[in-house]
View 1 (cartoon, helix red, strand yellow):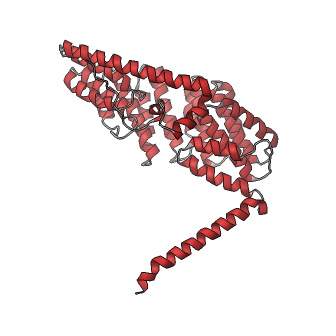
View 2 (cartoon, helix red, strand yellow):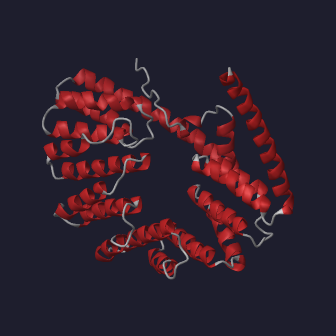
View 3 (tube, rainbow, N blue to C red):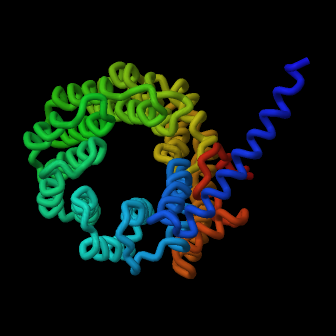
Length: 378
């Protein structure tokens, strides 16, 4: 009999706890605790940020966080840093510069100051000012102000900046300083491998770097996605060497459910075409047609299919495939023109807000699910 009372008692306790949290949160936000409103805002904004809802994070911070009135508490500055990160992801450089200037005058905590230098380094990096970026990242790494994750991030960007100015040896040394088990190291060695592939006729160093990068990935979603990109890069390098069997050995490790799958499918077909197996290549390429055309590898696939039919001496089928490719490309150009017109008329933020609110004509551009591109060609 006592079991029948477990659920009601739990419900009552749950309601009582919720009420207590609401009351305490309201009192907290009323200013009875220093920086209470900033802390609650930070928690809510972080929730959206960690759910990859960067637009809602930005809207929330812009509507509720008054940057011009500095309040000397930890969470106020953390909200500034979160706004910096979100604005950077949207490429809103003017807003980034405003916040950096504000924090340059108001930040007192050493860790915040070091984080600001790190963001300035990223700003210079995004602007292509590699030497300034190197100096800023080196400054950010001085002292003990940065947390472990931030330090690894700074080392990653420092190594990348060295690669941009073709100083691969310095980049390799910097990558060796990243913490064990950090995905930043895997990203860095991936980039080092890609650099070697483009810079050195002998691809042995490139393959070694990519193997090291693959070994540093983990079983998280991000780690799996990164490993897909590493295998794709290695397969692409093998294709350039015309070592088609070696390329297949790398490309088969790319997950079918990953975001790199369409590009891998395209390269997989290229490898079979290199072996003279055009029918198998065409079958592979057809699998990529279900993905959105904006995804790397998909647009190339439509022409590749026509090329494969041509190599198989199926000329009528090849003509139909070329006409299909033309129709798909024209449709994509119309959609891009619609998106471009919307961005010019009302800006990026308003366009994103409207896309989120309604099923507009440009929502296709942000879709991550599978779509059908193929038009019927009469």
